[in-house]
Length: 187
Image 1: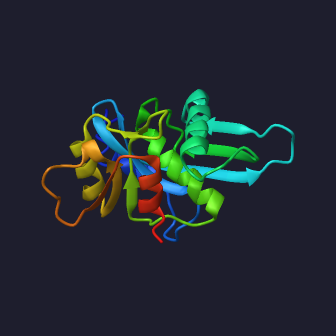
Image 2: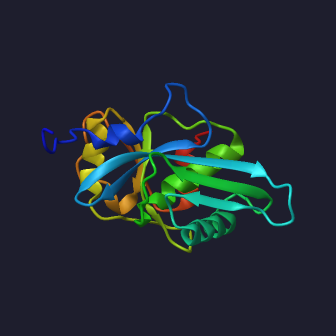
C-alpha cells in the first residue's frame, strides 16, 4: 500500500547467528549485484554410514563443493573422504561467486575438528586447484562492509589486503589454504 521501502541493512537478514560460537559456522562477505552482503556459512561434517559419502550443498554449486573437497584433501590435513558433508548459506541465498571457497573450507575444517571459529572473524577468497588462495573482486568494499558491522578480524587473499591498515581491523592475508587454516586455528 505504501510502495517500495529501502532495506537499510540487508546483511542482518542473513546473520541469524547466536552469541555463542559453534563449530562449522563462519561469516563471509559475498557480492550480490552491486553491494557486499555478510552471510553466515554453515557446514556439518558427520562420519558416513554408507559406502559412498553424501555431499549436500544449499546455496552453492555442488560441483564447486566437490572441487573444494578435493583441494582440501590434497593441500591440507582436512580429509573428508569418510564423512558426509553438508553446507548451507543461511537465508536461502544462492551465491555463484568464487569468494565462498575459503569460508566454506574453514567452516568444514571447523566442523570436522569440533572447534568453533572466532565469532568476530570473517573470510572471503577463491581457492585454486593447487591450494592457493586467489583474490576476488571488490576486496576493499568487502572489508569496509565487515568493519561497518562490527567484525574485527578477517582472513583474506594476500592480493586483497589493502595497502594501509584499517583502524580496528586485524587482517590475516594468506596465500595458501594451509596458511588460512593456521590463521583460523592458531596453536
